Amino acid sequence: MTDLRAITVTATDLEALKEAEGRVAVCVTPEGKLSPGARRLNRLSKGALARAVESAGFEKAKTGDVMSLAWPAGMAAEAIDVVKLPRRPSVAEARKAGAALAKVSTKPALVLAESLTRPEDLAAGLALRAYGFTDHKTEKGEAPGAVTLMVSKPDEVGPRVETALAVAEGVVFTRDLVSEPANVLTTTEFATRLEALRDLGVEVEVIEEDRMAELGMGAYLSVSQGSESPAKFVIMRWKGGEADAAPLALVGKGVVFDTGGISLKPAAGMEDMTMDMGGAGTVAGVMKALARRKARANVTGLVGIVENMPDGRASRPGDIVRSMKGETIEIINTDAEGRLVLADVLWYAQEYEKPAAMIDLATLTGACIIALGHENAAYFANDEDLSGAFSKAAAAEGEGVWRLPFGPGYAEQIKTPLADIKNTGGRAAGTITAAEFLKVFVKEETPWIHIDIAGMAKTAKETPLAPKGASGWGVMALNRLVADRYEG
Image (tube, rainbow, N blue to C red; front, side):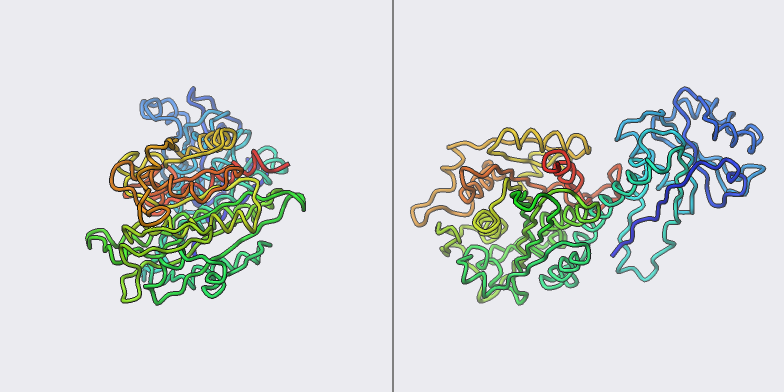
């Protein structure tokens, strides 16, 4: 698993700048105003910093960009990194600056943040953009060096940075899980990694297939029956709030590999189906973040972990299965398997966890990528207050979401004369009909959001805070939702 880049906070010590090794970064406002630390660096570098700030290059640079001065005279450091950043940056600006510093170099660094108002977001950007998944590389390269943040008030800033890094740990945990190949992250290995969260105070329960059968989880088990890897249903409970407070339930689809089953996918691109457990990966990352920062809330994560394989025992198109709720489902397409898993997990969550609200995440439909690309996740909600709180949290964290509608016409598309419902409504409005399917398994009194992260869990190009590949999308937004809505 990937270790987070080490970042510590210390009091500003201008005398230490001359002998600091590696790289020294300093924040300079867009107007070119030099802080006390920047003025000291300017003297040490014999005016090089001021000349850089007065240059056309600095003027053309965007907020959050970095200009590097190599081998400054009079200093031990190999470079001064000049960060163009207002003293009161936005969250996005501070994170962009941190990410830019991470991209400049992996050398040990001293960052002169002084009285910057969002040093914790700069630290988050540094930690997240330094990520690289190298577990299966023979040549792993040099690990990123430690970063020291020099600030004016370390006693105030330190705890805020620790919280930001706790959330970053959750994001990195999700990225690692999504990046793993399916021969490594089997259903059993996935469950084992989640059991390790007990070390952070999370209660972890693993429900095996025999117990699932007793519970009547026929929809869930129909997906796993073609695989040699057993289904694992993992429940993670973080109890940081009042003892009698109902938890927020986070539900994740955890298909560790999806061949499509008997409705076999095309070979081209099938290797990407290692990320079909992205919803469960996000839930796991949120649970780790909440535990690491000791969130004062009750949150239960429930993830359905399966592998969807073709086999003589696999479900067939035309099969009819019975869900835990009791609804019968005609399987039209075995590649619409995630919603079968979620149907039973959603029902279990409501019957046994009695949540105050419920949010599920899944790499559910290719139709979502066609509709929204890789810029926004689609979401559906049956409760306006919960919808508004989630949308606000996602916007605050820079994680794009777009709400799509329910409607009786869409619900008609999943009706069938042979069973209560069928598992796909055809190509038209595929993301919406998948949500309508899940809605059947949500009680009217349960506030609920469904999030389709098919286009967000893994991307083909880098993002502001991540290299291309697994993004860890959703961990920050859901952590923010918990902090804003469920912590006292």
